[in-house]
Amino acid sequence: RNVRKLRCGIVLLKQWNTVHTAWLFNNCVAKACTKKHSALVNTNMQCTRLSDNVAYGLTMSFRWFADTMFAKRYGHRAVVLETVAGVPGMVAGMWQHLRSLRKMQPDDRGWIKTLLDEAENERMHLMIFIEIAKPNWFERLLILFAQFVFWHFYFVLYVLFPKTAHRMVGYFEDQAVVSYTQYLEEIDSGRIENITAPQIAIDYYNLIPNARLREVVKAVRADEQGHAEVNHNMADQLS
Image (cartoon, rainbow, N blue to C red; front, side, top):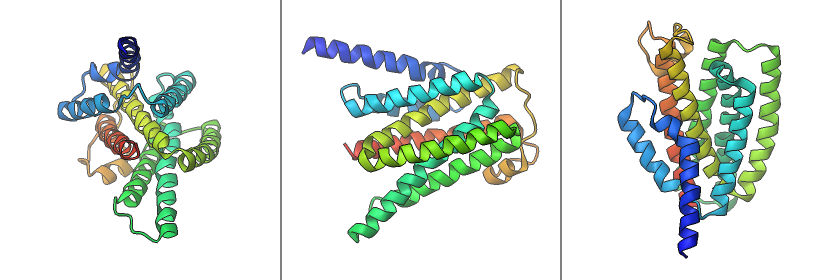
């Protein structure tokens, strides 16, 4: 039993260091939000559950792909990843909708609206970063391919293993927080120009008229923190 606890502690420490060190020790402006998210991460990093480890492994595989393809081109990374991020909420919301119809029962948990709202929010992130990054034809083709593949993958995963699917999205969003924090660091250091925010972002987030890219990234990061909490909580409810 002691050996099992020791192994569990080692796995948890590795996961913590890999996923969250960059985020927790960077200069996040929203300290209250950071503390709330950190507490949630402590609660949900369950090393004893196979489904959580599978979800974590899938997440880090996608993370490796994004790092390899885009490195520090955070605007272009956001365009492709937000395309993928808009899929889970739509797939899960649609499945929960059909489940309610099939069982002839109301959605007492309120998951349908929550998930569809998440999908819409991620779609708006994509619209915003398209204005910022101006993807070329290759990246647009990559967007189509990524969406096609991930839609089918996530649909099968959600139908068969909904808990794993929600946990994976929670980890996805944790990684999005890491990426957007790194994006902010690049802006603050001057390595990425703090350009004027696109009008679509100003309207969507009700920003001041002369808002800059930094304010947009902070707002998007806050959305991702919220999505992480929601999906981790849904995975917990399915345990």
